[in-house]
Amino acid sequence: MTSEAGKKTEAFDIVVAGAGVGALTLANYLAPLGFRILLLDKRASLAPVHRGELVQPLGLDILEELSLLKELMAAPHTLYRSFDFLNGEGRLLMRSHYERGQGPYPFALAIEPHQMDQILAQNLSSSPNVVLRFGAEMTAFAVDGQGVTITARREDGEESRILARVLVGDDGRHSRVRELAGLGSGNGRIAPYRDSYLGGSLLLPEEETALSPALRDPTGRYFLGPRSIFFFFSVSARRRFFLLLLPDSDREAFFSRGTAPLLARLDPLVPGFAALAQSQGYGDPSRYLSLPVWKVDLDRWCGDGVVLIGDAAHAMNPHVAQGRNQAMEDARVLAPLLAKALLAGPLVLRSEIKEYENRRRPIARALHRLADEMTFVWNSGNPAVVAAREISFCGIGRLADLETKIVTTIGGSAVCPLTPLDKLRALAAGLFASSPK
Ligand SMILES: Cc1cc2nc3c(=O)[nH]c(=O)nc-3n(C[C@H](O)[C@H](O)[C@H](O)COP(=O)(O)OP(=O)(O)OC[C@H]3O[C@@H](n4cnc5c(N)ncnc54)[C@H](O)[C@@H]3O)c2cc1C
Picture 1 (cartoon, rainbow, N blue to C red):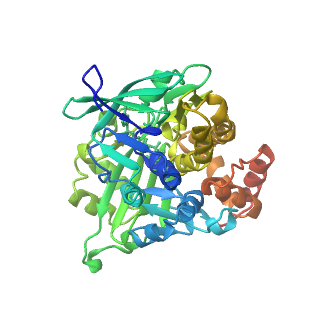
Picture 2 (cartoon, rainbow, N blue to C red):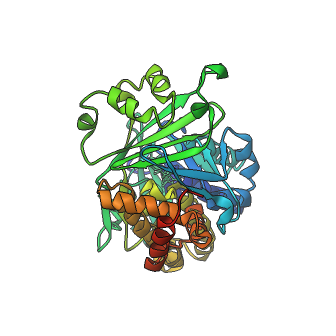
Picture 3 (cartoon, rainbow, N blue to C red):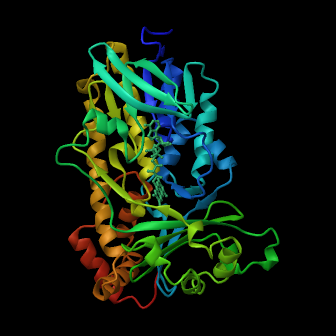
């Protein structure tokens, strides 16, 4: 159809701005119901991002519900039953075990995110009612009693008009949908965290004998030192990822003495790391991925004709390793409410989907609170905080109920923060521990 203004006009029930994991999960839930769905993404494709992420028991449960877990398990991944927490010198403080949590699976999977997104996208390809369009940016929209009118611009500059009955914003932490809908105002908070991360990816050589055992070992290792974090983990037999805390200072300051002192500092923690990183370009600061960390904490997640999911609604600190998993859970909770509202009238109304906001927002808020607390403790260089942190880690490993709380929270099934009494017990148990458990 072509309108008077000369713009091509299309019509869908649901348009999603952004084709992140939240959008792809939502489309997978709704596609079998026959709704006409359009996913628009300004990216050119679901290309690799050279990062590793954890799919927690919560995300695994959702994939199983969509009958896609087997496919993910057949793709390259590393299965984690536990993670190690070590101090800045490499002394083991605690090993946390997923089997001690209350989630539906006793493990998490570390993956390259694009591989999982491609599985979700591939599953949509057999649904003629779903269109996945890359290189198309949502630039504007207007809502009236009959629906939502969306403007999208292709890479070549051509604009089109799309009519929808609801616009879902899965367009990330800097969401344009949120901004245009006025959902970012109020008492909420949208701001970057003080510290960010640098990331990198290493491909192990095929010749295994040339590798140190520490590099070959897929164990997930969090090294927490004073004002330093080094997270080293595996996403497949040959692919390793690492994240480094980039303290408050800017990138230039971090690398002011070049990368040699940094690599030399990390090498004793994972022997062989420095030489491999150097050989794969990490002698050059520009090779490191820059990963800013944002907090999006909103009072409202939906309005008439508009709803936010994923980072657009609740970008959170990666300390809780939850963003991808919570975006998937948004989709699981929102899908049936959207379906019901779409059957009821031409425009999806806030009153019809507010239950989504009521159920999801308290969980996101609780995770924000926890992430803020973890940021204070984990990112600290204060000797007293560092000492208390190390003692507490040792203590938590000895108190089964506290480990259960932590692993259940990280697994995404429920948010169970430690109470002040729990923290005192962890300190006391750690003080009397001679070695980690
Ligand atoms: C260092 C780091 C480590 C992390 N580790 C983990 C982890 O281990 N586990 C975990 O669960 N989470 C992790 N996360 C968080 C996770 O990456 C995100 O929460 C998740 O990707 C958010 O998914 P989303 O569906 O909100 O979409 P996003 O991934 O935010 O994607 C948004 C999409 O919208 C598109 N877009 C933006 N604007 C427009 C527009 N106007 N029109 C059309 N398209 C648009 C963009 O191109 C993009 O593709 C980590 C994050 C960081 C920074």
